[in-house]
Amino acid sequence: MTDVALKTAVIVPAEVRPVSGRFRQFARQFARNRSGMVGLVIVVVVTLLAIFAPVVAPFDPYEINRIERLQGPSRTHPMGTDDLGRDLFSRIVYGARISMTVGLVSVLIATVIGAPAGIIAGYFGRWIDTLIMRVADIIFAFPAILLALAITAFLGPSLRNVTLSLGIVYAPGFARIVRGPILAAKHEEYVEASRVIGAKTGRILVRHLLPNVLSPLLVTATVTFSFALLAEAGLSFLGLGAQPPEASWGVMLSSGRRFMETVPSLAIFPGLAIMVTVLGSNLLGDGLRDVLDPRLRR
Amino acid sequence: MMIPTLLGVSIIVFLFIRLIPGDIVQILSGTQGEMTPERHAVLRHNLGLDRPLMVQYADWLSGVVRGDLGNSLKTHRPIRADLLSRLPVTVELTIGSAIIGLAIGIPAGIIAALKRGTRTEFVAQGAGLIGLSVPDFWLGTLFLLVASRYFGWYPGARYVSIFDNPAENLAIFILPCLAVGIGLSASLMRITRSSLLDVMGSGYIVTARAKGLRPGALLFGHALKNALVPIVTIIGLQLGYLLGGVVIVETVFNLPGVGRFVIDAISARDYPIVQASVLMITFIVLMVSLLVDLLYAYIDPRIKYGQGGE
Image (cartoon, rainbow over all chains, first blue to last red; front, side, top):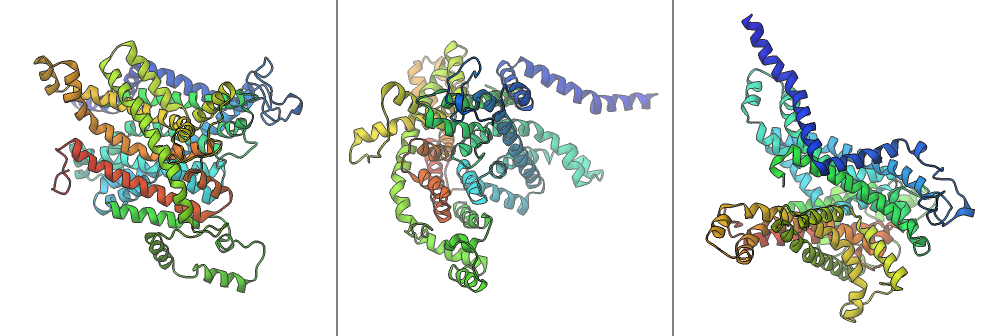
């Protein structure tokens, strides 16, 4: 009886309740963070637009209609039409797909490369740490957008290469952010205890050390997502990312510039779409940081 | 730390050329279409591509150290001369943007910190977030739109050096510098505010205030200097971001700087120019970071280099 009570006392609070309880506490705190919630709403709306673009967009974003070219905003075309008569609103809705995909995939690549590298560097220390962090320092030495631009230029301009290059450029940031908490946690008693009772390295890393880095990882991912959105738009604007007629916000802005004196909406709306999405992601990142890392709260 | 990083940077830049899909011999020799294996082997030998990679790197690096950045594939001119002639434009744009960033960001950050909890702080915070989210190339485009549509002004149609005509030069640079500087001012505002709030809560400020020190003397005599350390860090870290922005904004405003040079070289597939420009910009960024590190010791005398301290 005592045994059962003891087991329940240990197992229930340690493995079941705190996880859901912690999440619920996090959700409650986050819901109280007004700017974080505004950011979340913006990011969710843009994501939904991206997913349901065929339903939301009133026209085919690639359908050329020379009769209706270079029109200002009207009831039929709420954001006007471009130089080929394509509906700008529909193209911006489809553009959300490109931006969100590039942002998400490049952050994923950066996490997959950077986080394990940082965990390994922090946990094993010595020459592995020196080697990994030296490589990270070298990549950090380059201005991020310039390195991404160069990698894309040499690999060949395409959206795939932009995504890949951004993933590579942002990976060291993830390695650095993860290494610190691992360094701090690896000498904690619960890790030592786990090692003493014979837990394998993989188990220690995943079960005991990984939870320490999830919060900083989430915050870094959100911030990096904003950078990636801006970088993709910039590189596509320069002709290195998405290629016409792809409906990327950067491409639209670049081609819209040529006609901006007659139809200013062509230069205004794509930039506005980039700004609102990046703002949403920045607000979300700030909100997450406030909740997950109270030391940084201001 | 600096030398290994520089060597690492040079290795990456050297290896860039290996990323190019397709036949590197044809690309670098500028030949097109089918060629005999003999001709291919001769070209490969002439370009030095038949030697071990390490030897090729050492050869390339010794050239770079002596200031030989190679020749353009298209014009066959030495890249160094072209690059150096474009550097002043990029440097002026970067310095101008930094001045605007500092002139707006630091006072705004101080005001936001001093007016904590008021509507002023809320507005400053909101403006800061928007400033961080605006793409600089879009802001530049909007400036051009407003200037041309509403003022009939077409800035930067022709580049004029600051030494030839300072007023005209200022007219060309003011909008691009604003476009890049506003983003920088947003991050500087945020860091100034949070750093100053940190310092204002510390014991010696409370004591100074309790002794009846005037708010102005408190801020300028005591708080600001300590709050400067993280601000300087951010300025150092932002230089790379600033140069990235400058590269794109040069294209928007058609300024003949290094950024424009790179973009033109990319469209012409003139790879050695891209390689040399990236190397030079990164070298400059590293040098400025070193200067910023040295500046710390001046701002914060507790930091001493080379004496076993931090």
